[in-house]
Image (cartoon, rainbow, N blue to C red; front, side, top):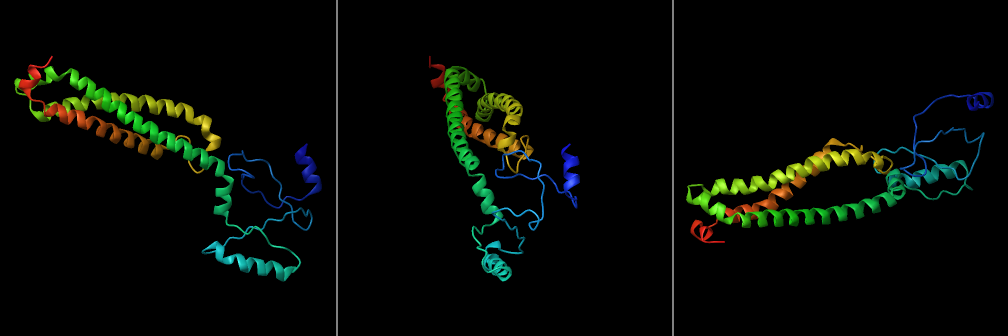
Length: 220
């Protein structure tokens, strides 16, 4: 019915792709573009594609408009990049808070991994002393403790990635310029978490490799 009314009133001269209006997280809505001379509505927005720095063309655009009609005011001259930033300010503020909380969570995770590995390593001091007394090298002890911590990290990364893939579909409308299942993002986050976990396990592993076998055998 809508198509019939449109065809009866206007002539379709072209079809363009869907676009977002007002806010970037809004879903694309049906839109009809009409000539300004046939359907004048205020305010009129002029989009200009410029080669080079768009800010340098502001005076040229204003002068061109005034050449057509000197009574027309030209205001709110802005670049598309700035308009996009203003339109997404709420999302960027939320992303800043989420990033801050993520950094705090990453720090807490590193401290937690360090604490767990250090505690379990301390509990195995006597075992480590026996291993070294039987001929285990420091490098083998270092790798043993490091492998213990990283095995927990791998389990956490796999389960976390699966949970993230399941939940990112609910954030689809909040994302701009990136897909909910963006592979480089997941890969980068996984690498960063793995590096942080490795650093957290390094200190306990190094301490375990420096254990004195005689002192370890006499420890409770």
